[in-house]
View 1 (cartoon, rainbow, N blue to C red):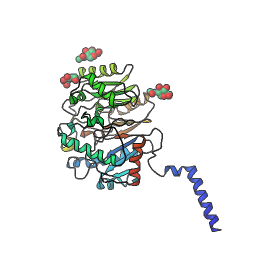
View 2: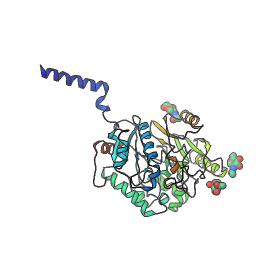
View 3: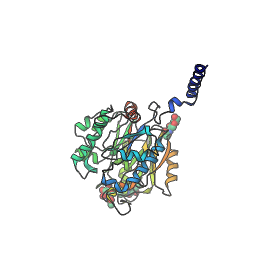
View 4: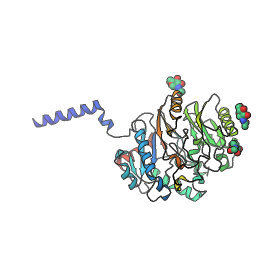
Length: 372
Ligand SMILES: *[C@@H]1O[C@H](CO)[C@@H](O)[C@H](O)[C@H]1NC(C)=O
Ligand SMILES: *[C@@H]1O[C@H](CO)[C@@H](O)[C@H](O)[C@H]1NC(C)=O
Ligand SMILES: *[C@@H]1O[C@H](CO)[C@@H](O)[C@H](O)[C@H]1NC(C)=O
């Protein structure tokens, strides 16, 4: 009799599993979900004094952002043991991976193009022009994730072609945008720059090279423009400088015939420096704040994660964006991190396919290697 009851319980259990999809849902991330991107974010390490005064703000942002991504796209959160302990009460354990990165701004040293990933050489723009430090930051990342089985084309890095991930914005189809900083860093003419980018950025045949909006700063295009669908882009509002505004809009229109451009409601200037109370390392006075920069969002196949700032114009901009895209707009409040000069996109590394699978499984199964 007992075995029959057991048998029935097992049968019932498998039936319930099939109906509820329990077997599928037992992990937070679903690496087989069609079209899902993996977003990887990273908390500061406890040894890093630079972020100390913003530590709680960054941890709280990471928790909020990760919880907004769960169930939509996939997410993995990196951090040292202190950060992981902070995350554990708020985030599922199977998305946490105990590995502190040297830099929380995952966009820059990692890879670009989630579909055909490629790595350029990290510029020293974020590291007080210390190229050795930039190389070390990038190597630390690269060794770790290669040891987990993540693969990407390193040719541009090996050829010393400089570009931060934050300086390339894509629509995952045919278009990318970089700033003139790419030409300067690599001593290339506009035509040469476009040719190099088309060679390494697979699938792209239209490149816009816009002027820089913060000549003394990072000069990343992801603070200037973002694709909200294949042929619609949101552009930072440069009403304070009509030369910059005209040049930027004209370049985008020339490079991308037929593109629809939407300007942000409020202007942003590089003089919008840190709003951190008291002023401290993470709110470096030399780096313009990214507060108000709605273009620093993350585009995935089904979703658009758009930073908000508790501004009166947030909601109307979200509505406008939603009316121009088939992606579902997901607002992510970015006050607390934007003071440091970046927000949602700057903090995110994006992957798909086999690479995403390797990272999701490493976090889930707590796979650690010599380098990771
Ligand atoms: C920018 O474009 C507007 C509209 O085309 C024009 O009126 C204005 O003179 C231009 N400004 C500059 C500085 O080129
Ligand atoms: C306006 O933008 C142009 C083009 O980027 C730049 O050369 C100029 O210095 C800017 N002017 C001001 C006042 O920021
Ligand atoms: C949204 O999807 C529809 C149907 O596939 C398509 O016709 C339309 O062009 C898409 N709109 C945008 C903004 O991509």
